[in-house]
Length: 178
Image (cartoon, rainbow, N blue to C red; front, side):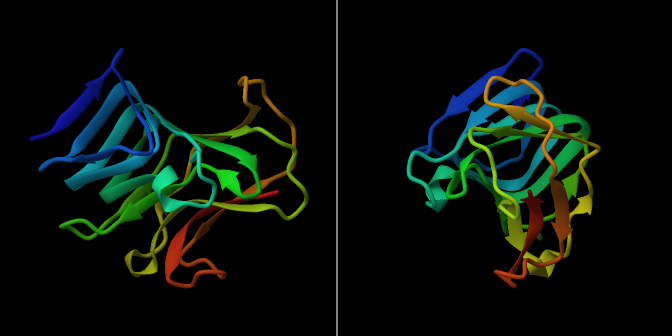
């Protein structure tokens, strides 16, 4: 059974939430916001809409991030929103193995909201998964940096796509570096 959120739909949950079902999630024009664990047997298919990953109330705890079990596919008309409150308190997206080999396919927009002024060389691993699945397929088409109110910011940064992270060689994903 598929969970589908279409245009105009809104689903909000908190970090205590563990959602489990037997089919995929389809985010097709709506908004999903929160942190917690989404456990599906197939994939998180995200062709349109907005996924807002909120920071944990308990910094550096895995439970405060969004954990997707299975495959994560973000389309060209979709937006992933990550918030950086400080070096130790920020939102993260984890993709873990489900019943199928996970795949991370990226397109669309990455919006990074800043709640502080980062220092040079601050690094945030904003999307991670096991390196056995290779580097992410595709890249974000657009990257926006804003303050918490959504106002555009002009700060130097880069996004790196990794087959593995140097600090955690068992992981791959996407890092944001100032």
